[in-house]
Length: 110
Image 1: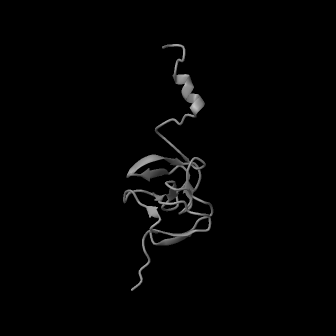
Image 2: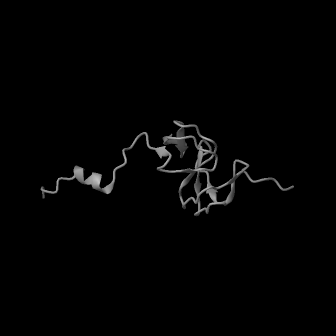
Image 3: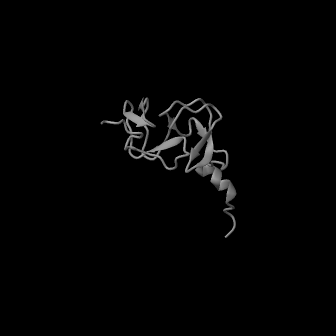
């Protein structure tokens, strides 16, 4: 009996509640993966340790990683689509650039 695996070995599911999976290696555009028993073909390259949608997510929906919400998607996202700065924002922590961080440091004091 050849059963379809639930997840491709190149993906990591951190918690059963998660609606994203993690790339265990860089996955090139055109790669075929299995996510929850469904076949997905990647439209774009996804770098090592980046997130992919475990299922389709609607704009505004929370992204769950480690069983906890880490932010929300800013557009509809298909199963297997890359989740990153272009379609995911944190609801909890501001993101600063290196230059923004300088405003928190007074360089004139010893």
